[in-house]
Image (cartoon, rainbow, N blue to C red; front, side, top):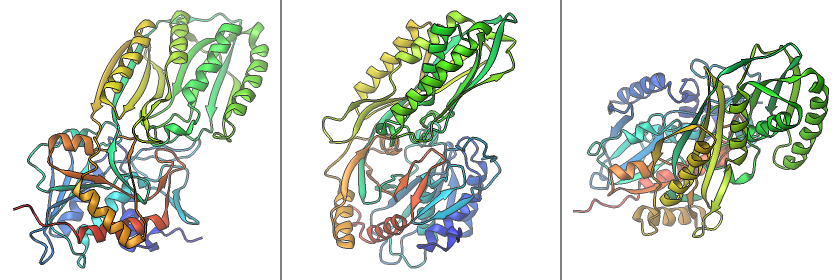
Length: 488
């Protein structure tokens, strides 16, 4: 099998994507990719800058005869979600991504691929490097830290960008044009606890929930996949109420915007109840696996003997934590009444972690209706307040309200129909595209989002459909050549 993705077509896009897989770029560690992009722009002789929010902006003049066309901003984000399978040795801050060509798909070897949003970056790079394309003035806006808070887009100052049309290249369904997205907000709830010593008549156990699909907490939330934190809590709660389980530590989930795939806990049970607990967990594991078998065929739940922990978390805090997690909404909370099949409001119960006498529970709320987002925020903070936790709400960002009368939408619909013989689907997405934030600083921008077909982003199963990349590129090239004249 030939795994050389740079040999795939279109070569100008896949070649750039291959180069991106060589440069470490997990969220929060983007220094190397910024240096790479600045060198890329300067080597082309193009104006290249890094703004105050660590965004890279590269400007390319119009081709001959296209100088009076409206300016186009090609927007994609530089960072990628760092997720890997259990047992996979990979350091996202130093190691390149190992890609595999698997039939009509490209995936990575046990890690996220970074097609989200590396293929958008690669396509913008191909436009910047091209010598034969027809286009008006181009600005490539490569935003920072999109996956971990959208701080690049939030820090973008008014007056920096010059274009009139923004094409966001961060969608993941070829053949669809997106004209709206959900907003989001983070809720972090914190329990404080004291540590209690255990007597010798306890047995230690390490409990693990692994093998879940995970995925993007916006795009995949409607699929009904298992949440490792919810499953772990179900096990711990049964152990607590029926067998005297004491919790020493918990570590579930890794990113706010990824459906949690794994959770690990260290617990202790009275020696007299330990064997009965193991029998009950064996039965409960089978029950949970049966419930989720259609969507989680590789779910694995284990409880194995481990060294007895020296201390455990205050049981009074533990029971409040378990009850709060049980009651906390997770998954789809409401479907849109206006757009069939679109999730309106959801919550991802993303992380549950203990350290330094505190337990933090991190959630990411999304909604395309701002009032519903606020209502859900109040719901979750009220729940954890009642459980005795303090909650902090931050990282909020607005949604992007659809504009069915958008000029760039009409242009892309026409071009798509001419090239591919069918009308593209037009919809909104239950994910946090940066369009809503950028549109707040640049309200006059005409915006649209599109991209190739990517499946299972934010998980090690992430893959991109090879033929869709060619269609995505062909559409981009054709649209750039048909951008209208500037309004005089």
